[in-house]
Image 1 (cartoon, one colour):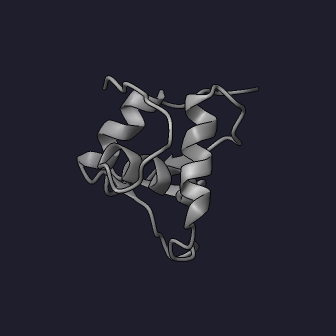
Image 2 (tube, one colour):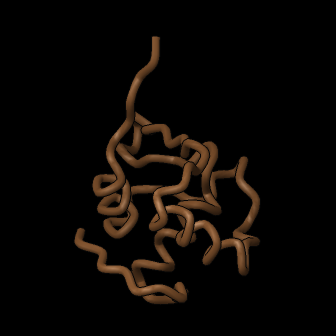
Length: 93
């Protein structure tokens, strides 16, 4: 059975509300550099990106990233204007 998780807007909202733990014990630190801009450019260009896996911890009500920490960090940094892409894009969240 396939299940679907929250949409991008919900995940972004959770990121900014500090409801997602990007670095649970099983995750390495953030290491992407130029890859961040390449990923965001791919998303904005409607290219496929691998799924991001986030689980909810019932005891805390927070979520933890199982797979996709680098991708979520790239999205977070783009929205916070820490990285820029060469094209012109309008993001509405």
